[in-house]
Image (cartoon, rainbow, N blue to C red; front, side, top):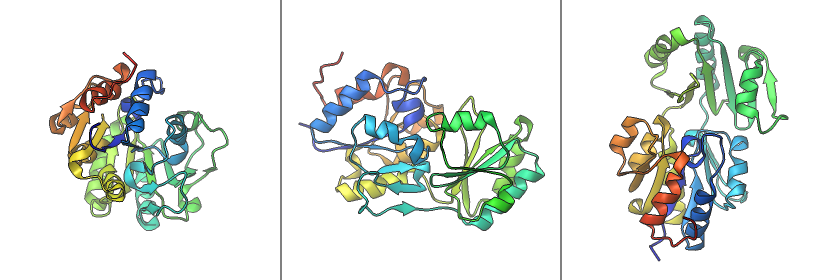
Length: 276
């Protein structure tokens, strides 16, 4: 058997097919990897509530990285040291004011699993929470409703305002936040506290399991995976990944639709799994 590796999986566009399911090949190869003693973790931009079903589907018993590293926790072991790194509420409200000034479509703040939505929007509720209709939503002006430090802020700007918005964020808030644009089709700008990314979460988990950097395998496809893919000794970009990610990755596998994770792990870890 290969030495014990830590395998970190991004969800959307990576582990999940385009219709948001885990292929049977991915599932069986990951199961074989775990049976062989490798450690599998999820590292996603999604909140806990929108990723926990995949965690259970894979039968994981490991810590999880949510909100691109702003929350690192262990869903099944309450003794595990939770790391929650929200941004200061003052910063958040100043960003919300910028959004009001630019007349964005909507702004949403997440405080771990609680969601604050500035304006009611059926579309946003359907996009984010199709799995859980009873999500803890608070709807109304963030200026008055948001009292806690948020884990992340999501902005849905008008198409023509995207670059102005990002320039404004850089000009006034670059010291305290990180911001990224989501992949198509969503023109969503996501904001977390400065210095937070998936690599931060991966570093903590690798340290916990005492896995050296050269035995960390990480898979991703978007710009929120850049630091993680760069940090991992074995950074793997999906065939459908953005070009900047492919250019820093050590390996490129086939697409999420072709079970790129399963294909790569089978070869790299020499897993004799039954699936072909």
